[in-house]
Length: 279
Image 1 (cartoon, helix red, strand yellow):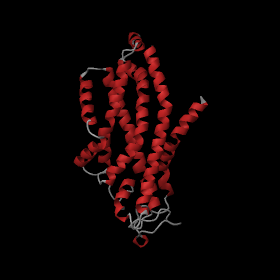
Image 2: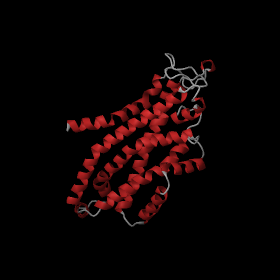
Image 3: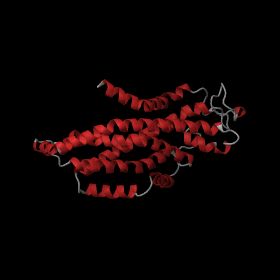
């Protein structure tokens, strides 16, 4: 049991580190991340400015720490929101298969999944207008559908199981069956998918900011920092390299945790499905 807990802790460790940085990073900034000091513009990395300064003389290292909540925490919250909303919709539709809600959900997910997620998010963000809130809403509109389809399929596969029929005969309400019997089965595949999608969500969110549809100046969001300094790539490469490396490391940490969590939960999910079929 202790070994199993340590495995989960090891799998989630990079993600916990990212979360800790996003929550506490702003307390460790060396300079004001938004104060412009033109006399210090485009200084190379050194002791005072570990990652150098940008065209306005702002400390890039401090801006990376200040922008961590915008980049990392927003992506994690979006992944959680997409997983929760998709799981709830798929669970209800799967249990009431053939209902009006189920038919509407199937058609809606077919339309959403017919387009690449980034393309759909670009279209929604373009219509709604630029801004971090609009970008997050656009991503959420396209990110919940895969969870809904997965959980619906999972729910349908076990909704006629004998133990659920026994629960109905014993007087359990539909709400109790959904929450106590079906939800534990649906949570793990949704969690596996969420773990695999965290890095993609972070990269897509930064991509929208890079294109001008997400965070707006003077925000320290990492994708926006890369976009704002891309013209300086040859003369002051550290202005692009620093936020690019921060984004690269964060995505790698998300992918490492996602793969580790997937490897830990996948055997349990298979065993759970075998048990549900047995009973």
